[in-house]
Length: 376
Image 1 (cartoon, rainbow, N blue to C red):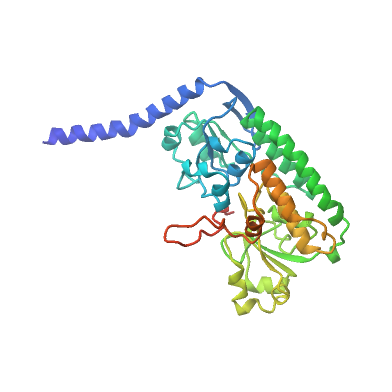
Image 2: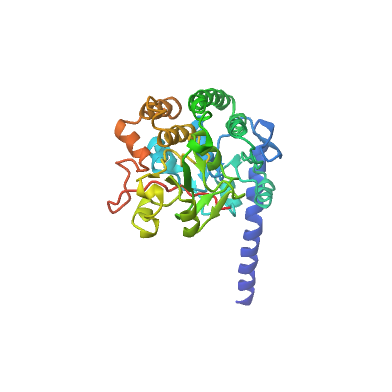
């Protein structure tokens, strides 16, 4: 009996050691059979990646929607974030992708089992090395350097799009160049007007960008630049952080003209709380939920030009009276997502509502805002 138990323990031990090694060997062998190319990712690492990846893991926050934008959405095998209701509406095949429980600790065995040949990931070295040592190509699309101007911010964003195109292959590169030209055209229309707005005429904006109404961004966050491009002034930009928590007393002291409700918060939380009633934005009914399409518009999304347009109409309605946002959204979705939303669908996106036909089991409507945000 004792010998049988010892034999069973040895078998379990060997399985625990050998099986992962076999997976790593299989993964490395499969990689060796693919045509490869060398790229330098945006964190400065030199990486061998497939010439045209076939099975992609999107473990970097906004990476899925970039891959989808560039025509490779059908290649996404796994991701670390639950995507928005609109992402599932526009790409029904997304339901086949495996959602991993954590991007902080990627499951190498499962990644190998899924046949993943490319991972988009954060700039975290320990987890990156864990995957790379198993023969999995890992690239970081995130540039950790802080832009020093709105012009530099836009340039960095286009560099990110082009990086995705370079990694994904010739078809994606062509779409990336088309997108960057399109982005320049749309942003120029807005910035040519807002650049002339003096600071004294720019509304002071409190931008909620986290899990609650006191989670915002500081000057190191991308919200600062998006609001600036739209002709606004983010009240928290003097805080030298990315994501930051503030207090009720601080918001009252700022007394913003406009409140933007992004992240996972809800305008109802503010409007139902008497502590907010003294704030100018609440008194003047200028509290707005931030739109969500394939991704959160204000969180590194390729829909960020639409976010800037939307903000510009809120901040300076008289200057953007002729900007037809409904038309712009329909045009963009049709051209790059190959899906033309109805007017009702556009209205729902702008109000941060899910598609009318997407419901959870039990008949409850699935809420927008399902995409998680990276904490800092």
